[in-house]
Image (cartoon, rainbow, N blue to C red; front, side, top):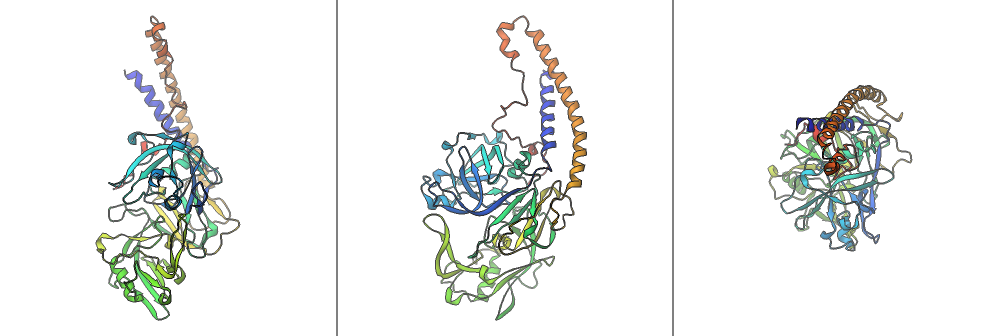
Length: 495
Protein backbone atom coordinates (compact mmCIF):
# COMPACT_ATOMS: atom_id res chain seq x y z
CA UNK A 1 0.00 0.00 0.00
CA UNK A 2 2.80 2.41 0.92
CA UNK A 3 4.65 1.65 -2.30
CA UNK A 4 1.48 2.53 -4.19
CA UNK A 5 1.16 6.11 -3.02
CA UNK A 6 4.74 7.19 -2.37
CA UNK A 7 5.81 7.51 -6.05
CA UNK A 8 2.61 9.31 -6.95
CA UNK A 9 3.03 11.75 -4.08
CA UNK A 10 6.65 12.43 -4.93
CA UNK A 11 5.86 12.99 -8.59
CA UNK A 12 2.94 15.29 -7.78
CA UNK A 13 5.26 17.34 -5.56
CA UNK A 14 7.96 17.43 -8.25
CA UNK A 15 5.40 18.54 -10.86
CA UNK A 16 4.19 21.29 -8.51
CA UNK A 17 7.74 22.46 -7.89
CA UNK A 18 8.43 22.41 -11.62
CA UNK A 19 5.44 24.63 -12.35
CA UNK A 20 6.45 26.97 -9.54
CA UNK A 21 10.01 27.19 -10.83
CA UNK A 22 8.99 28.23 -14.36
CA UNK A 23 6.05 30.42 -13.35
CA UNK A 24 8.22 33.56 -13.65
CA UNK A 25 9.80 34.15 -17.06
CA UNK A 26 11.58 37.48 -17.34
CA UNK A 27 11.82 37.19 -21.12
CA UNK A 28 8.05 37.60 -21.41
CA UNK A 29 6.83 41.11 -22.22
CA UNK A 30 4.39 42.73 -19.77
CA UNK A 31 0.71 42.30 -20.51
CA UNK A 32 -0.84 45.68 -21.42
CA UNK A 33 -4.63 45.96 -21.23
CA UNK A 34 -6.47 49.15 -22.19
CA UNK A 35 -9.18 50.52 -19.90
CA UNK A 36 -11.62 52.00 -22.40
CA UNK A 37 -15.14 51.89 -23.81
CA UNK A 38 -15.95 48.33 -24.91
CA UNK A 39 -18.94 47.02 -26.87
CA UNK A 40 -20.34 44.10 -24.88
CA UNK A 41 -23.55 43.19 -26.70
CA UNK A 42 -23.90 41.20 -29.91
CA UNK A 43 -25.99 43.96 -31.51
CA UNK A 44 -23.18 46.49 -30.95
CA UNK A 45 -25.29 48.89 -28.87
CA UNK A 46 -24.23 48.23 -25.25
CA UNK A 47 -20.95 49.97 -24.45
CA UNK A 48 -19.22 49.82 -21.05
CA UNK A 49 -15.96 51.35 -19.85
CA UNK A 50 -13.56 48.72 -18.54
CA UNK A 51 -10.89 46.20 -19.47
CA UNK A 52 -11.87 43.99 -22.37
CA UNK A 53 -11.58 40.21 -22.10
CA UNK A 54 -13.08 37.42 -24.19
CA UNK A 55 -14.44 34.36 -22.35
CA UNK A 56 -15.42 31.01 -23.85
CA UNK A 57 -15.39 29.45 -27.30
CA UNK A 58 -16.38 31.42 -29.28
CA UNK A 59 -15.54 34.52 -27.21
CA UNK A 60 -18.23 36.35 -25.27
CA UNK A 61 -17.00 39.90 -24.67
CA UNK A 62 -16.78 41.53 -21.24
CA UNK A 63 -15.70 44.94 -19.99
CA UNK A 64 -14.57 44.67 -16.36
CA UNK A 65 -13.34 47.23 -13.85
CA UNK A 66 -10.25 46.21 -11.87
CA UNK A 67 -10.91 45.36 -8.23
CA UNK A 68 -8.37 44.92 -5.43
CA UNK A 69 -11.03 43.40 -3.16
CA UNK A 70 -11.63 40.44 -5.50
CA UNK A 71 -9.34 37.44 -5.89
CA UNK A 72 -11.34 35.74 -8.64
CA UNK A 73 -12.89 36.97 -11.88
CA UNK A 74 -16.61 37.43 -11.41
CA UNK A 75 -19.01 37.86 -14.30
CA UNK A 76 -22.78 38.22 -14.59
CA UNK A 77 -25.17 35.49 -15.73
CA UNK A 78 -27.17 36.10 -18.91
CA UNK A 79 -30.31 35.08 -17.01
CA UNK A 80 -29.96 38.24 -14.90
CA UNK A 81 -30.84 40.20 -18.05
CA UNK A 82 -33.23 37.69 -19.58
CA UNK A 83 -31.27 37.63 -22.84
CA UNK A 84 -28.36 39.18 -24.71
CA UNK A 85 -30.76 41.54 -26.47
CA UNK A 86 -31.56 43.46 -23.25
CA UNK A 87 -28.85 45.98 -24.08
CA UNK A 88 -29.39 48.38 -21.16
CA UNK A 89 -28.99 45.49 -18.71
CA UNK A 90 -26.06 43.89 -20.55
CA UNK A 91 -24.23 47.21 -20.78
CA UNK A 92 -24.84 48.01 -17.13
CA UNK A 93 -23.26 44.70 -16.07
CA UNK A 94 -20.27 44.95 -18.39
CA UNK A 95 -21.39 41.87 -20.32
CA UNK A 96 -23.21 38.65 -19.42
CA UNK A 97 -22.22 35.02 -19.87
CA UNK A 98 -24.26 32.27 -21.51
CA UNK A 99 -22.56 28.98 -20.63
CA UNK A 100 -24.63 27.06 -23.18
CA UNK A 101 -22.86 28.96 -25.97
CA UNK A 102 -19.30 28.02 -24.96
CA UNK A 103 -17.95 24.66 -26.10
CA UNK A 104 -15.06 24.90 -23.60
CA UNK A 105 -17.18 25.63 -20.51
CA UNK A 106 -16.47 23.19 -17.64
CA UNK A 107 -18.37 23.56 -14.38
CA UNK A 108 -16.53 22.59 -11.21
CA UNK A 109 -17.26 21.68 -7.62
CA UNK A 110 -16.30 24.66 -5.49
CA UNK A 111 -13.84 22.62 -3.40
CA UNK A 112 -12.14 21.21 -6.51
CA UNK A 113 -12.01 24.44 -8.44
CA UNK A 114 -8.56 25.86 -9.20
CA UNK A 115 -9.29 29.49 -8.35
CA UNK A 116 -8.01 31.42 -5.37
CA UNK A 117 -9.43 31.43 -1.86
CA UNK A 118 -13.14 32.09 -2.21
CA UNK A 119 -14.21 35.72 -2.11
CA UNK A 120 -17.01 36.79 0.17
CA UNK A 121 -20.38 35.57 -1.09
CA UNK A 122 -23.55 37.59 -0.58
CA UNK A 123 -26.37 35.78 1.20
CA UNK A 124 -28.69 36.66 -1.70
CA UNK A 125 -26.25 35.63 -4.43
CA UNK A 126 -25.92 32.47 -6.52
CA UNK A 127 -22.46 31.41 -7.64
CA UNK A 128 -21.26 28.95 -10.28
CA UNK A 129 -17.57 28.02 -10.24
CA UNK A 130 -16.22 27.00 -13.62
CA UNK A 131 -13.28 27.03 -16.03
CA UNK A 132 -13.05 28.25 -19.59
CA UNK A 133 -10.78 29.83 -22.16
CA UNK A 134 -9.97 33.50 -21.67
CA UNK A 135 -8.41 35.81 -24.28
CA UNK A 136 -6.75 39.16 -23.64
CA UNK A 137 -6.95 41.99 -26.16
CA UNK A 138 -3.89 42.08 -28.45
CA UNK A 139 -2.31 38.86 -27.24
CA UNK A 140 -2.44 36.19 -24.59
CA UNK A 141 -4.71 33.20 -24.03
CA UNK A 142 -5.18 31.10 -20.90
CA UNK A 143 -7.02 27.80 -21.07
CA UNK A 144 -8.80 26.40 -18.04
CA UNK A 145 -8.97 29.88 -16.50
CA UNK A 146 -10.98 29.96 -13.21
CA UNK A 147 -14.15 32.10 -13.25
CA UNK A 148 -17.19 32.71 -11.08
CA UNK A 149 -20.64 33.29 -12.56
CA UNK A 150 -22.37 35.55 -10.07
CA UNK A 151 -26.13 36.18 -10.00
CA UNK A 152 -27.80 38.43 -7.47
CA UNK A 153 -31.20 39.81 -8.39
CA UNK A 154 -31.48 41.78 -5.14
CA UNK A 155 -28.22 43.71 -4.79
CA UNK A 156 -26.85 43.01 -8.27
CA UNK A 157 -23.82 40.93 -9.23
CA UNK A 158 -20.34 42.06 -8.26
CA UNK A 159 -18.40 41.72 -11.51
CA UNK A 160 -14.74 42.63 -11.75
CA UNK A 161 -11.21 41.76 -12.82
CA UNK A 162 -9.43 40.59 -9.65
CA UNK A 163 -6.28 42.40 -8.53
CA UNK A 164 -6.39 41.25 -4.91
CA UNK A 165 -3.48 39.82 -2.92
CA UNK A 166 -4.46 36.24 -3.83
CA UNK A 167 -5.60 37.03 -7.37
CA UNK A 168 -6.11 33.96 -9.56
CA UNK A 169 -5.89 36.33 -12.55
CA UNK A 170 -2.36 37.45 -11.65
CA UNK A 171 -1.34 33.85 -10.94
CA UNK A 172 -2.81 32.62 -14.21
CA UNK A 173 -1.15 35.15 -16.52
CA UNK A 174 2.28 34.63 -14.95
CA UNK A 175 2.09 30.83 -14.95
CA UNK A 176 0.79 30.78 -18.52
CA UNK A 177 3.68 33.09 -19.54
CA UNK A 178 1.35 35.84 -20.65
CA UNK A 179 3.05 38.24 -18.17
CA UNK A 180 6.53 38.13 -16.57
CA UNK A 181 5.45 38.75 -12.97
CA UNK A 182 2.47 39.61 -10.81
CA UNK A 183 3.53 43.24 -10.28
CA UNK A 184 0.97 45.55 -11.83
CA UNK A 185 0.78 49.20 -12.79
CA UNK A 186 -2.52 51.03 -13.25
CA UNK A 187 -3.55 54.22 -14.96
CA UNK A 188 -7.28 54.58 -14.36
CA UNK A 189 -7.70 57.07 -17.18
CA UNK A 190 -10.20 59.89 -17.11
CA UNK A 191 -13.98 59.46 -17.09
CA UNK A 192 -14.81 63.17 -17.30
CA UNK A 193 -16.39 65.01 -20.25
CA UNK A 194 -12.87 65.01 -21.72
CA UNK A 195 -12.23 61.28 -21.34
CA UNK A 196 -8.90 59.52 -21.58
CA UNK A 197 -8.34 55.77 -21.80
CA UNK A 198 -6.49 54.06 -18.98
CA UNK A 199 -4.21 51.04 -18.97
CA UNK A 200 -3.42 48.06 -16.75
CA UNK A 201 0.10 46.65 -17.12
CA UNK A 202 0.81 43.23 -15.56
CA UNK A 203 4.48 42.49 -15.06
CA UNK A 204 5.54 46.14 -15.04
CA UNK A 205 4.24 49.69 -15.45
CA UNK A 206 3.99 52.50 -17.98
CA UNK A 207 6.65 55.09 -17.15
CA UNK A 208 5.19 57.55 -19.67
CA UNK A 209 2.19 58.08 -17.37
CA UNK A 210 4.25 58.85 -14.25
CA UNK A 211 5.09 62.41 -13.26
CA UNK A 212 7.84 62.81 -10.67
CA UNK A 213 8.97 60.10 -8.27
CA UNK A 214 7.03 57.12 -7.02
CA UNK A 215 6.19 57.24 -3.30
CA UNK A 216 6.26 53.90 -1.46
CA UNK A 217 3.52 52.73 0.92
CA UNK A 218 3.26 49.48 2.91
CA UNK A 219 0.33 47.18 2.23
CA UNK A 220 -2.44 47.44 4.77
CA UNK A 221 -3.77 44.63 6.93
CA UNK A 222 -7.08 43.27 5.67
CA UNK A 223 -9.71 43.53 8.41
CA UNK A 224 -13.48 43.89 8.59
CA UNK A 225 -12.94 47.60 9.24
CA UNK A 226 -10.49 48.01 6.33
CA UNK A 227 -11.35 45.27 3.81
CA UNK A 228 -8.72 46.15 1.22
CA UNK A 229 -4.98 45.73 0.58
CA UNK A 230 -4.15 49.27 -0.60
CA UNK A 231 -4.52 51.42 2.49
CA UNK A 232 -3.38 54.96 3.21
CA UNK A 233 -3.94 57.31 6.10
CA UNK A 234 -5.75 60.48 5.12
CA UNK A 235 -4.55 63.37 7.28
CA UNK A 236 -6.93 65.99 5.88
CA UNK A 237 -9.41 66.74 3.11
CA UNK A 238 -9.97 70.40 2.35
CA UNK A 239 -12.20 72.37 0.02
CA UNK A 240 -10.89 75.57 -1.58
CA UNK A 241 -12.63 78.08 -3.84
CA UNK A 242 -12.14 81.75 -4.79
CA UNK A 243 -14.29 82.65 -1.79
CA UNK A 244 -13.24 79.86 0.59
CA UNK A 245 -9.71 79.09 1.73
CA UNK A 246 -8.96 75.62 3.11
CA UNK A 247 -12.29 74.61 4.58
CA UNK A 248 -11.46 71.35 6.34
CA UNK A 249 -13.71 68.31 6.18
CA UNK A 250 -11.91 66.53 9.02
CA UNK A 251 -11.58 68.12 12.47
CA UNK A 252 -8.21 69.78 13.04
CA UNK A 253 -7.82 67.55 16.11
CA UNK A 254 -8.21 64.38 14.02
CA UNK A 255 -5.35 61.87 13.91
CA UNK A 256 -6.38 60.96 10.37
CA UNK A 257 -8.54 58.24 8.86
CA UNK A 258 -7.54 55.00 7.14
CA UNK A 259 -8.79 54.88 3.54
CA UNK A 260 -8.95 52.13 0.93
CA UNK A 261 -7.72 52.85 -2.59
CA UNK A 262 -10.18 50.96 -4.80
CA UNK A 263 -10.43 51.31 -8.61
CA UNK A 264 -13.68 49.37 -8.88
CA UNK A 265 -15.59 52.31 -7.35
CA UNK A 266 -15.51 55.61 -9.21
CA UNK A 267 -16.57 58.14 -6.55
CA UNK A 268 -15.11 59.03 -3.18
CA UNK A 269 -16.70 57.61 -0.06
CA UNK A 270 -16.08 59.96 2.87
CA UNK A 271 -17.24 59.69 6.46
CA UNK A 272 -20.78 61.05 6.98
CA UNK A 273 -19.42 63.82 9.21
CA UNK A 274 -17.12 64.89 6.37
CA UNK A 275 -20.01 64.87 3.90
CA UNK A 276 -22.08 67.02 6.24
CA UNK A 277 -19.20 69.49 6.51
CA UNK A 278 -18.98 69.54 2.73
CA UNK A 279 -22.70 70.27 2.31
CA UNK A 280 -22.44 73.13 4.81
CA UNK A 281 -19.44 74.61 3.03
CA UNK A 282 -20.95 74.39 -0.45
CA UNK A 283 -24.48 75.49 0.55
CA UNK A 284 -26.04 72.26 -0.68
CA UNK A 285 -29.85 72.26 -0.85
CA UNK A 286 -31.06 68.84 0.31
CA UNK A 287 -34.19 69.14 -1.85
CA UNK A 288 -31.89 68.09 -4.70
CA UNK A 289 -31.23 64.35 -4.40
CA UNK A 290 -27.84 62.70 -3.98
CA UNK A 291 -25.56 65.72 -3.52
CA UNK A 292 -26.54 67.33 -6.82
CA UNK A 293 -26.67 71.04 -7.63
CA UNK A 294 -28.58 73.03 -10.25
CA UNK A 295 -26.20 74.25 -12.94
CA UNK A 296 -26.83 77.89 -12.02
CA UNK A 297 -25.55 77.35 -8.45
CA UNK A 298 -22.80 74.82 -9.12
CA UNK A 299 -19.98 75.23 -6.56
CA UNK A 300 -16.70 76.57 -7.96
CA UNK A 301 -14.19 74.95 -5.62
CA UNK A 302 -11.70 72.08 -5.73
CA UNK A 303 -10.88 69.26 -3.32
CA UNK A 304 -7.48 68.52 -1.85
CA UNK A 305 -6.63 65.18 -0.21
CA UNK A 306 -3.48 65.09 1.94
CA UNK A 307 -2.04 61.84 3.29
CA UNK A 308 -0.16 61.55 6.56
CA UNK A 309 3.21 61.52 4.74
CA UNK A 310 2.41 64.79 2.98
CA UNK A 311 1.43 63.22 -0.37
CA UNK A 312 -1.22 65.55 -1.80
CA UNK A 313 -3.76 65.21 -4.61
CA UNK A 314 -6.01 67.96 -5.97
CA UNK A 315 -9.32 67.16 -7.68
CA UNK A 316 -10.16 70.19 -9.86
CA UNK A 317 -13.62 71.67 -10.11
CA UNK A 318 -14.47 70.28 -13.55
CA UNK A 319 -13.89 66.74 -12.27
CA UNK A 320 -15.40 67.17 -8.82
CA UNK A 321 -18.66 68.53 -10.27
CA UNK A 322 -19.91 67.13 -13.58
CA UNK A 323 -23.23 67.14 -15.48
CA UNK A 324 -25.53 64.37 -14.29
CA UNK A 325 -24.75 61.14 -16.09
CA UNK A 326 -26.08 57.61 -16.15
CA UNK A 327 -26.91 54.65 -18.37
CA UNK A 328 -29.20 55.21 -21.34
CA UNK A 329 -31.46 52.61 -22.96
CA UNK A 330 -28.41 50.93 -24.50
CA UNK A 331 -26.44 50.77 -21.28
CA UNK A 332 -24.07 53.54 -22.39
CA UNK A 333 -22.80 56.08 -19.85
CA UNK A 334 -24.03 59.47 -21.08
CA UNK A 335 -25.12 62.90 -19.83
CA UNK A 336 -28.75 62.47 -18.79
CA UNK A 337 -29.45 65.98 -17.49
CA UNK A 338 -27.13 68.89 -18.33
CA UNK A 339 -29.03 71.26 -16.02
CA UNK A 340 -28.01 69.27 -12.93
CA UNK A 341 -24.44 68.78 -11.68
CA UNK A 342 -23.47 65.85 -9.49
CA UNK A 343 -20.60 65.60 -7.04
CA UNK A 344 -17.90 62.93 -7.24
CA UNK A 345 -18.63 61.59 -3.77
CA UNK A 346 -21.18 59.25 -2.23
CA UNK A 347 -23.98 61.02 -0.35
CA UNK A 348 -24.26 59.30 3.05
CA UNK A 349 -24.99 62.03 5.63
CA UNK A 350 -27.31 59.95 7.83
CA UNK A 351 -24.99 57.00 8.41
CA UNK A 352 -22.67 56.43 11.36
CA UNK A 353 -19.00 57.32 10.92
CA UNK A 354 -18.04 54.07 12.64
CA UNK A 355 -19.91 52.05 10.00
CA UNK A 356 -18.42 53.71 6.90
CA UNK A 357 -15.12 52.89 5.21
CA UNK A 358 -13.42 55.84 3.54
CA UNK A 359 -12.69 54.96 -0.13
CA UNK A 360 -10.52 56.75 -2.67
CA UNK A 361 -11.93 55.49 -5.95
CA UNK A 362 -11.41 55.88 -9.68
CA UNK A 363 -11.67 59.67 -9.52
CA UNK A 364 -8.69 59.74 -7.14
CA UNK A 365 -6.79 57.36 -9.42
CA UNK A 366 -7.36 59.63 -12.43
CA UNK A 367 -4.64 61.74 -10.81
CA UNK A 368 -2.51 58.99 -9.24
CA UNK A 369 -0.63 56.15 -10.93
CA UNK A 370 -0.35 52.88 -9.00
CA UNK A 371 2.43 50.28 -9.00
CA UNK A 372 1.57 47.31 -6.78
CA UNK A 373 3.98 44.62 -5.62
CA UNK A 374 2.29 42.07 -3.36
CA UNK A 375 5.37 39.85 -3.10
CA UNK A 376 7.19 42.65 -1.32
CA UNK A 377 4.14 43.91 0.62
CA UNK A 378 4.21 47.39 -0.86
CA UNK A 379 2.64 49.66 -3.41
CA UNK A 380 3.73 52.95 -4.92
CA UNK A 381 1.99 56.07 -6.16
CA UNK A 382 2.94 59.08 -8.22
CA UNK A 383 1.05 61.84 -9.95
CA UNK A 384 -0.39 60.72 -13.30
CA UNK A 385 0.57 62.65 -16.42
CA UNK A 386 -2.63 64.27 -17.64
CA UNK A 387 -3.63 64.61 -21.26
CA UNK A 388 -3.69 62.18 -24.17
CA UNK A 389 -1.84 58.89 -23.91
CA UNK A 390 1.70 58.93 -25.26
CA UNK A 391 2.04 57.55 -28.78
CA UNK A 392 4.99 55.46 -27.56
CA UNK A 393 4.28 54.15 -24.05
CA UNK A 394 7.37 53.40 -21.98
CA UNK A 395 6.54 49.96 -20.62
CA UNK A 396 9.01 49.01 -17.91
CA UNK A 397 9.32 45.30 -17.10
CA UNK A 398 9.49 44.38 -13.41
CA UNK A 399 10.54 40.77 -12.96
CA UNK A 400 11.35 39.46 -9.50
CA UNK A 401 10.79 42.98 -8.14
CA UNK A 402 12.83 44.31 -5.25
CA UNK A 403 12.30 46.86 -2.53
CA UNK A 404 13.90 49.75 -4.40
CA UNK A 405 11.63 50.35 -7.39
CA UNK A 406 12.30 54.05 -7.44
CA UNK A 407 10.45 55.75 -10.24
CA UNK A 408 10.38 55.71 -14.02
CA UNK A 409 13.30 54.06 -15.77
CA UNK A 410 13.19 55.33 -19.32
CA UNK A 411 15.97 52.99 -20.42
CA UNK A 412 13.34 50.32 -21.03
CA UNK A 413 13.58 47.08 -19.06
CA UNK A 414 14.60 46.71 -15.45
CA UNK A 415 15.25 43.59 -13.46
CA UNK A 416 17.90 42.00 -15.71
CA UNK A 417 20.29 41.41 -12.81
CA UNK A 418 17.45 39.85 -10.88
CA UNK A 419 16.76 37.65 -13.88
CA UNK A 420 20.34 36.37 -13.68
CA UNK A 421 19.80 35.50 -10.02
CA UNK A 422 16.60 33.71 -10.92
CA UNK A 423 18.46 31.78 -13.61
CA UNK A 424 21.07 30.60 -11.11
CA UNK A 425 18.42 29.56 -8.64
CA UNK A 426 16.49 27.76 -11.34
CA UNK A 427 19.59 25.87 -12.43
CA UNK A 428 20.05 24.55 -8.92
CA UNK A 429 16.38 23.74 -8.76
CA UNK A 430 16.58 21.80 -12.02
CA UNK A 431 19.26 19.55 -10.56
CA UNK A 432 17.04 18.86 -7.57
CA UNK A 433 14.06 18.23 -9.81
CA UNK A 434 16.10 15.84 -11.91
CA UNK A 435 16.95 13.84 -8.82
CA UNK A 436 13.31 13.73 -7.76
CA UNK A 437 12.28 12.76 -11.29
CA UNK A 438 14.82 9.93 -11.31
CA UNK A 439 13.51 8.69 -7.98
CA UNK A 440 9.95 8.91 -9.28
CA UNK A 441 10.92 6.94 -12.36
CA UNK A 442 12.64 4.25 -10.26
CA UNK A 443 9.71 3.88 -7.86
CA UNK A 444 7.08 3.83 -10.59
CA UNK A 445 9.11 1.32 -12.60
CA UNK A 446 9.47 -0.87 -9.51
CA UNK A 447 5.75 -0.58 -8.89
CA UNK A 448 5.04 -1.66 -12.46
CA UNK A 449 7.31 -4.70 -12.10
CA UNK A 450 5.59 -5.67 -8.85
CA UNK A 451 2.22 -5.40 -10.58
CA UNK A 452 3.46 -7.46 -13.49
CA UNK A 453 4.63 -10.28 -11.19
CA UNK A 454 1.35 -10.24 -9.27
CA UNK A 455 -0.76 -10.23 -12.41
CA UNK A 456 1.14 -12.70 -14.61
CA UNK A 457 -1.23 -15.57 -13.86
CA UNK A 458 -4.33 -13.54 -14.58
CA UNK A 459 -3.10 -11.36 -17.39
CA UNK A 460 -6.15 -11.80 -19.56
CA UNK A 461 -8.56 -10.91 -16.76
CA UNK A 462 -6.47 -8.00 -15.52
CA UNK A 463 -4.84 -6.67 -18.70
CA UNK A 464 -6.72 -3.39 -18.34
CA UNK A 465 -5.15 -2.67 -14.98
CA UNK A 466 -1.69 -2.92 -16.57
CA UNK A 467 -2.59 0.00 -18.83
CA UNK A 468 -3.71 2.25 -15.97
CA UNK A 469 -0.31 3.46 -14.80
CA UNK A 470 -0.93 7.12 -13.94
CA UNK A 471 0.34 9.65 -16.48
CA UNK A 472 0.91 12.62 -14.22
CA UNK A 473 1.76 14.96 -17.10
CA UNK A 474 -1.10 13.99 -19.40
CA UNK A 475 -3.70 16.38 -20.76
CA UNK A 476 -6.36 14.89 -18.54
CA UNK A 477 -5.82 17.28 -15.65
CA UNK A 478 -9.32 18.45 -14.85
CA UNK A 479 -11.26 20.62 -14.47
CA UNK A 480 -8.46 22.92 -15.60
CA UNK A 481 -5.28 22.90 -17.63
CA UNK A 482 -3.95 25.61 -15.32
CA UNK A 483 -2.80 24.40 -11.91
CA UNK A 484 -2.50 27.30 -9.48
CA UNK A 485 0.30 25.95 -7.35
CA UNK A 486 0.15 28.92 -5.00
CA UNK A 487 -2.64 27.21 -3.08
CA UNK A 488 -0.35 24.31 -2.18
CA UNK A 489 2.26 26.59 -0.67
CA UNK A 490 0.41 29.78 0.33
CA UNK A 491 1.02 30.87 3.91
CA UNK A 492 -0.91 34.13 3.78
CA UNK A 493 -4.49 34.11 5.01
CA UNK A 494 -6.90 37.02 4.96
CA UNK A 495 -8.48 37.74 8.32
